[in-house]
Amino acid sequence: QTLPVLLLSLVGAVLTGELLQKLQTWRVFIRIEELFILVPILLNLKGNLEMNLAARFSTSANIGELDLRLTRRSLILGNLALLQVQALIVSLLSGLLAFVLGLASRKGVHHALQNPIHDPASAVNAAAGGLDATAALRGGYFEALLVLCVSMLAAGISSGVLGSFMCSLVVLCRRIHVNPDNIATPVASALGDMVTLVILGGLSSLFILFMGTIVSTLVFIVLLGVIAVNVVLTFRNAYVHELLTIGWGPLFAAMAISSGSGVVLETYVNQLPAFALVSPVVTALSGAAGSISVSRISTALHSGRKEPYLVVAATLFALACPILGLFLVFLWLTGQAEVTTLFAGGFMVVVAIQVRP
Image 1: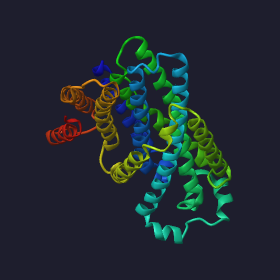
Image 2 (image 1 turned 30 degrees about the vertical axis):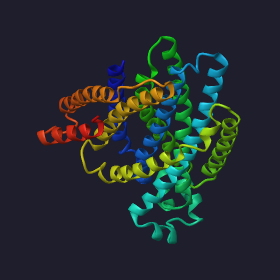
Image 3 (image 1 turned 45 degrees about the vertical axis):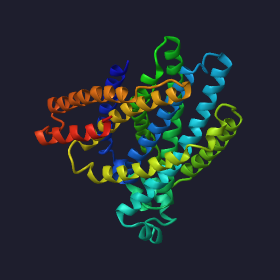
Image 4 (image 1 turned 90 degrees about the vertical axis):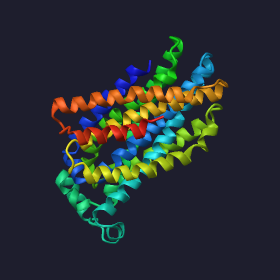
């Protein structure tokens, strides 16, 4: 059950890496450096939310909560509303953090705030000038709103699509008597990054056309309203309302950790060949293996059964390492990176540290 979905995670990660390499040449990502800082922050946090949903829903399936139709419907709607609340709030903070880190990496936050690059009169000219006029708006209100809107919209849309898919997948696994713990979380990992990155790239290219206008402000206000509506829906759902006030600490801790990844990605993506291709693969496959283990532990704790933790972890480690070895062969055959002995050895050591039991 696990090997095919881990291979799917590898394929999804490779496609994500290929897409990330393409995005680094897009003019919008060149002009607005904060978007590259946003990528790992947003992808990591979205992955956390979707794998959290998959693990929580898999546990509900394994303890029989999805067997009753009314209970299943309430659980699905409540979890999707909760996912929207979490995704929009976390993506709002992610966009804000990416913008601040982008200013800091360019010339310092204090200087950028005290000496904004744009002035109000430049907004109209920038809107008329298209993408080339973004230099007049860098580091100011309009760029900040663009980053926030793109981040929140990408998170909200992908959460709606992937959340619905994950709930359907878990219900299907339950009906065909397959353990969703082994399926749902790695599928969420495989699809989540790629879908979110596609949406992020498309929205960035769209919103840059309206930079310097009121469009981003209106969209931002609407998104705040969507958060309020989903908070009310979640609060009224008896199965998930308590989750509104718990679990935020780990999410914010993950955001702080992944912000470092964003700075690293922005720094080295144009300096090291194939860095944008390799990094999503390492993080995605190790994350998928870890999420399977965590999901199984969650089910074991709720059902009162004993889980052979070390056996599961060792099995996942034994499966993940050969799969990443196949990725090295792929890099060598396609010539996208120079696979030397030093590179291959360092790559496998990093993987072993991340996936080890």
